[in-house]
Amino acid sequence: MVLYVCTGNTCRSYMAERIHIAHFGPGTACSAGIAAFPGQAANELAINTLTENKIDPGDHRSSALCHDIMQEAEAVITMTAAQHAALCRAYPEHGEKIRTLHKTRDIEDPFGFTQSTYDACFAQISECIIPRK
Image 1 (tube, one colour):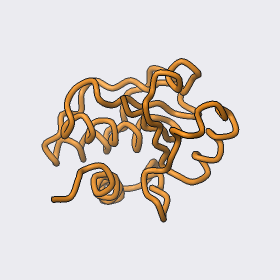
Image 2 (image 1 turned 180 degrees about the horizontal axis):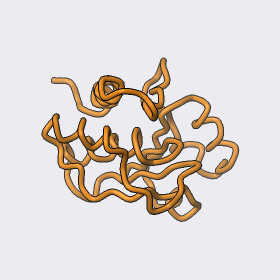
Image 3 (image 1 turned 30 degrees about the vertical axis):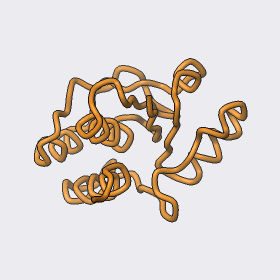
């Protein structure tokens, strides 16, 4: 299972999880947030973006990153280099399976911005997850 990680687990990692599941099937991905408040609903603009792109938004509730989730994951994918560094410090025993989603740029947090920002974030995430033909 691939674990996608961001800050609050209501936007980026949530969208990454849903994109991944849409292309690779149920049970292949999950998500969590470094500073998530467990049980929060997904951001409405993120849900809109997924729906507009014909991806089932599911019934997401945020999860906080913890040792158990890190242990279960086969790969841990962060949205930013800073999140990558933080996870490598907090979970050095899992360092070999932690990487950033994009190799050369951060996936910026769309929280607090417009629908078009969420759409652009979705496009960046999709570009990294969906295999090119």
